[in-house]
Length: 296
Image 1 (cartoon, rainbow, N blue to C red):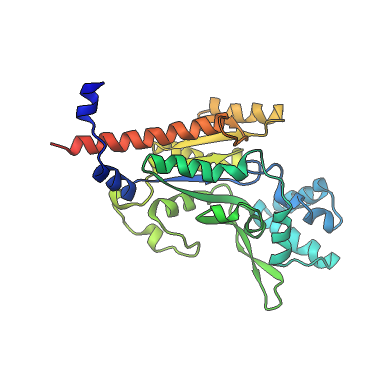
Image 2: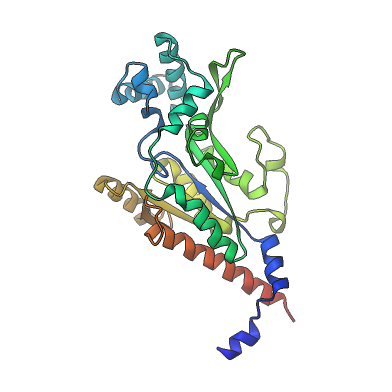
């Protein structure tokens, strides 16, 4: 122990240097990851007189008939049904839906606790959403302020505040572009210059190996594999009350689609808590080893 103490002194100077340099990103899907079910099912679908099954069947049929993007199809169906039934489809109405959403156990307390754990190890943790759900609904949830950026589907609004056209549509494949934006520190959705500009790995704010991607299903596979293949970590989550959800997520692990799996329970001392803390420990240790390798 004395030998190690002499070899690895963590001075205030070294710690400050690490704090300036070390960033880690926790990137979450939303539906089925931080909250159960699909967010459109928390009021909107019922308000236009449809059952969940009817709405999603219509959306899927539309996509199949026209060989269209399923995300754009569901957004179109939302607009069509709202117009037919005269249901207001305004940003404020979506945000109200978000305020009524159920979150998984421990989610509200998760961010502050894991941020403090990172700070104690010289790591600044940045939280992001990367979702095919609606940004406006996520903005209404009590955890919206925890995220540095919410990448999600979004509508354009006219002068009266009514949604009339998709502004952003995020499907399972183009989700990966936002991983590169996070990697390069580009927040803008519209940007296509900075994200494609050359930037040496050493200058990228969030290396892929400092990313933790958390998702619940097949739509998250491209992001999970992108992060895992670049030495980051991906966590497949499942509803703790769903045996079928566990089986599907376990299959992702067996097929090497994700690094590990956990129930969507974010309480202190739970499996998710343990996994993320351990990954943060590894990030801090790897950084310290890299610093030692430079010392003479």
